[in-house]
Image (cartoon, one colour):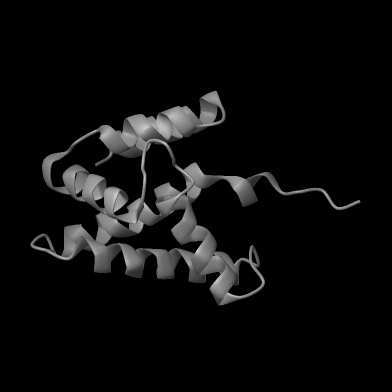
Length: 123
């Protein structure tokens, strides 16, 4: 019997990885206007990292799973990828904490809640 690895279904960590890449790119290019493209690049970067860590078998699977964490696995709080992009832009431009609140609701443990809180405090 093969045991499932707990991180494979960890949408909060996947989303925070995408947000980290996006935050870092916005710091480099503060006048970024295309958050959809920024998110696509971040999903690709995170997918490549996870693929090289052997979390996934191929690039397509990695990208789809990471994208899905942002697009659908945070329902009902985030209905679609456009909602995610909008909330991310509000966070990066206006320091909105809506994304933090959503990720806290979806966190599975006290330690994950602490990780989310620390992440957003470091914004």
